[in-house]
Image (tube, rainbow, N blue to C red; front, side, top):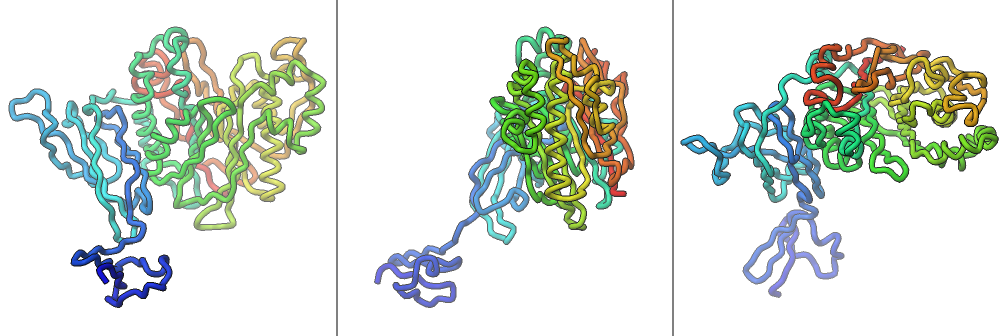
Length: 482
């Protein structure tokens, strides 16, 4: 017949053989004189994209999506535009291959003014490669800002810490959805150059900052969904980190937790929205009944979109070592101390359920922007294990919103980075709002990476600035099992 299928070893495949068995890798289809080699599920790129903004000295991390392939097995070749012999602008017709063959490319100052091109060949790790695709940058490499606030911190974090230790980072990265409002530009951050508030610019700084911390755990707050999907997840994936995202209810931003793939595997996720959990989970029935006595406060608590991200991780080298990693961003209002106390009570009950009931006695690391200073009821509750019903935060918004309860939790938690003078520094306010709380029965602090100097923070008056991508400062510490 004119059409025959032959197996890899040259034998004709009988027509009654099912398709799944017949079409094997290496089989050859004969149609007349033409020969077609069969390749099942060949590696193929579905998306290849470069960031819009490229800065000299900052890593360029492409977004790579593929079928039957993985970014770590793909081949990468980077090109730059050829600069015309007589100077002037590059024509874009001729491309010169650079020496770079890694997934992440950091352009040098010599490439300022030139566009980049990436050629990617998808691979599956088994020496099979699909057709290559190319993508050119939409604009040229621009000059970087020079020294950044995090440069000195990177000197402490050049290497990933050993297997008995965990480097944890907590960082509110300032959502684009808030940075781009007229209020932000004119009232909150009038001292910040408008281009430095743009997310394309800030992402360059964020990716370099986070990659340079060589962290095992990164908990981020105020993460725009698009920033997670298109920027942070692909970039940190290239540096060995797996990302998890939980969006806030009815919002465009949320929480992200990243963990180092060769140190941890994900066992389970237990994320909740505070308001929903309070109403629907039997765990919080007693608290819910108490809250019902204070309808004004109850209404405010239930209107909030705040969420809690909880991930249970297991060490890849010692399966007996597990961690309960929690991440949250509590209600922001200065007079909302009573609301935050309810939110943190729900959080601690939920974490207790995960770290005592589901996985008995696993250590807790609780990161976040708690919007609470060390003198607050929330900080006291977390660090001391309880709060009395006469604490002043129950009347944080006046007597008409008094909401008095006595609360407790079973954990012995410690702020790993202590109580810095500030973790948030804007024109009209500075204070310590962010913490990494650790289970002091199971974990101890090996080192705290120093915060940037006050001089660095105030070089451009306050945060954010051309040299710092957020209005908060990342907390970083190395922890080890006791």
